[in-house]
Length: 88
Image 1 (cartoon, rainbow, N blue to C red):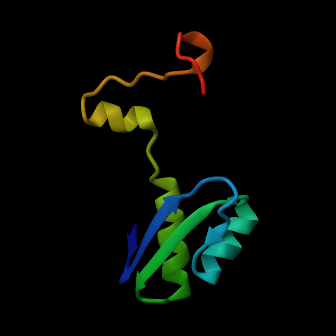
Image 2 (image 1 turned 135 degrees about the vertical axis):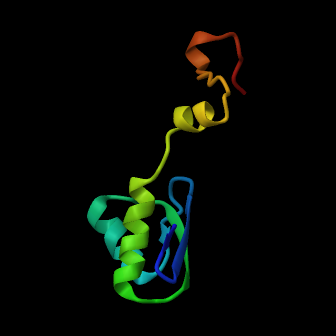
Image 3 (image 1 turned 60 degrees about the vertical axis):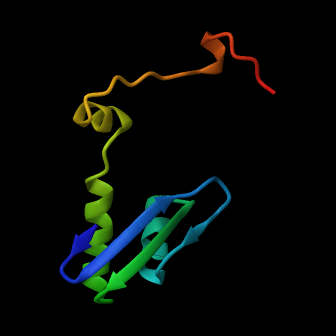
């Protein structure tokens, strides 16, 4: 996500990873309840731009279904309880 001269790359991480990011993003994640995330801030380190870019990125997230629709693909949800896949 970009805002002004600030660019933020955010990646979802597995449970237990923690929040590895700029201290401003770490504080925002604590307030909103995000526990596992990696974020890289590039460009301007203006605090207002960092926060705005981060929240714009959160607001612009798309679901798997929205991404599939854009690419004209059919999305199938696979769960272990409804098919004959054996675990382990």
